[in-house]
Image (cartoon, rainbow, N blue to C red; front, side, top):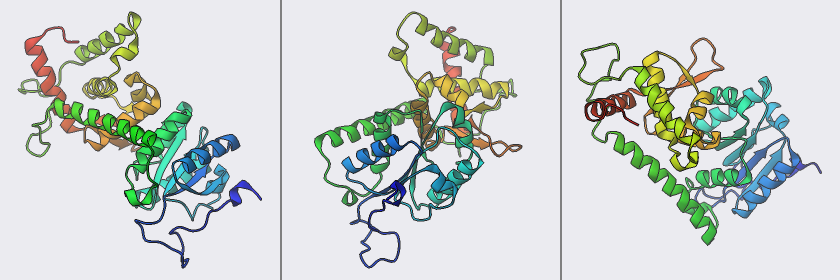
Length: 316
């Protein structure tokens, strides 16, 4: 029997008499990866988390359109992509956007731009060259959104893992709130860097780039991990690019974050969700997409720079 023929009994997909109600049936996972050892590892971790693995197959199964019967969560590994793989990812993204499933996709730095661009209907969890721990964390992140009745009783280790995930999300939310909790994008118009007499406006791009260089300089003398603050580094990079009128790719923004790409993507997703970042598709080439500051974030950054220019001539 081929590995792709391994299919668990139906738990809610299809007209079987055993179909259970949504809150009672277990969470079902589908795995698609070309590397057999990776499929085996993913299956092992999923089953340890109490998931039912419905299918474990190669990427060709997706490319051939054989993905009609999928689980609640679909985990895809595609370090290299071609037209067929991108088309399959786009189909999965559309189904995820319609609420049919939740999607975790791992890829490589080289393929990140193509993968990111073709997935604009949902908000998949994107991983870049992840290790086993990062895949488990991503799975826990997705599982946290399911009703508790659909998961097995969590062990103490499981609870600690989910707690750490919750703490990370809370830290992100706290940093976002501190930018300017009073700001409302409806009540306050977006700033215009072209209006020199505006009371609150973005500064000269040279100032922002100088701050970025100063932050990077620390890594020459001290361990850079001591100062990891990817949200702020990305906000600075997008602020400078907005002033300069430049578009920023997701790969470039991950580099600006000065953290591993998977970590940067997790922050990008949270900042998009918070309304600070905006995904913008390339009008000329639909296979490309960029990240920009939202008007809300631009106003917050303008207020920040107005404040520090008044109080400190050399901000760091």
